[in-house]
Image (cartoon, rainbow, N blue to C red):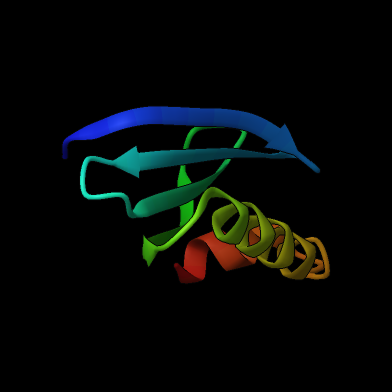
Length: 74
Protein backbone atom coordinates (compact mmCIF):
# COMPACT_ATOMS: atom_id res chain seq x y z
CA UNK A 1 0.00 0.00 0.00
CA UNK A 2 1.50 3.30 -1.05
CA UNK A 3 0.22 6.34 0.74
CA UNK A 4 1.16 9.99 0.97
CA UNK A 5 -0.33 10.83 4.35
CA UNK A 6 -2.03 9.21 7.31
CA UNK A 7 -4.33 10.49 10.03
CA UNK A 8 -4.76 8.78 13.42
CA UNK A 9 -7.17 9.72 16.17
CA UNK A 10 -9.24 8.20 18.96
CA UNK A 11 -13.00 8.57 18.96
CA UNK A 12 -15.41 7.18 21.57
CA UNK A 13 -13.13 4.31 22.56
CA UNK A 14 -12.00 3.37 19.05
CA UNK A 15 -8.81 4.10 17.13
CA UNK A 16 -9.36 5.48 13.62
CA UNK A 17 -6.62 5.45 10.97
CA UNK A 18 -7.15 7.05 7.58
CA UNK A 19 -4.60 6.72 4.77
CA UNK A 20 -4.48 9.02 1.75
CA UNK A 21 -3.26 6.88 -1.14
CA UNK A 22 -1.05 8.05 -3.97
CA UNK A 23 -4.01 7.88 -6.38
CA UNK A 24 -5.98 10.38 -4.26
CA UNK A 25 -8.36 7.85 -2.71
CA UNK A 26 -8.58 7.09 0.99
CA UNK A 27 -8.86 3.95 3.07
CA UNK A 28 -9.94 3.86 6.69
CA UNK A 29 -9.65 1.35 9.53
CA UNK A 30 -11.53 1.35 12.82
CA UNK A 31 -9.80 -0.61 15.58
CA UNK A 32 -10.63 -1.30 19.19
CA UNK A 33 -8.14 0.02 21.72
CA UNK A 34 -6.40 -3.39 21.73
CA UNK A 35 -5.49 -2.91 18.05
CA UNK A 36 -8.01 -5.39 16.61
CA UNK A 37 -9.48 -4.17 13.33
CA UNK A 38 -13.27 -3.94 13.55
CA UNK A 39 -14.10 -2.37 10.18
CA UNK A 40 -12.09 -1.40 7.12
CA UNK A 41 -13.21 0.66 4.14
CA UNK A 42 -11.61 1.28 0.72
CA UNK A 43 -12.37 3.59 -2.17
CA UNK A 44 -13.27 6.66 -0.14
CA UNK A 45 -12.89 9.84 -2.16
CA UNK A 46 -12.06 12.41 0.53
CA UNK A 47 -10.79 12.81 4.07
CA UNK A 48 -14.15 14.31 5.04
CA UNK A 49 -16.01 11.28 3.67
CA UNK A 50 -13.72 8.94 5.64
CA UNK A 51 -14.18 10.92 8.86
CA UNK A 52 -17.97 11.05 8.46
CA UNK A 53 -18.11 7.30 7.79
CA UNK A 54 -15.94 6.62 10.85
CA UNK A 55 -18.29 8.69 13.02
CA UNK A 56 -21.35 6.88 11.64
CA UNK A 57 -19.86 3.41 12.14
CA UNK A 58 -18.61 4.20 15.65
CA UNK A 59 -22.10 5.42 16.59
CA UNK A 60 -23.45 2.04 15.43
CA UNK A 61 -20.75 0.13 17.32
CA UNK A 62 -21.56 2.05 20.50
CA UNK A 63 -25.21 0.91 20.33
CA UNK A 64 -24.16 -2.75 20.59
CA UNK A 65 -24.58 -3.81 24.21
CA UNK A 66 -22.21 -6.79 24.25
CA UNK A 67 -19.19 -5.67 22.24
CA UNK A 68 -17.23 -8.86 23.02
CA UNK A 69 -19.97 -10.92 21.32
CA UNK A 70 -19.58 -8.76 18.23
CA UNK A 71 -15.83 -9.41 18.21
CA UNK A 72 -16.46 -13.16 18.47
CA UNK A 73 -18.89 -12.92 15.54
CA UNK A 74 -16.43 -11.01 13.36
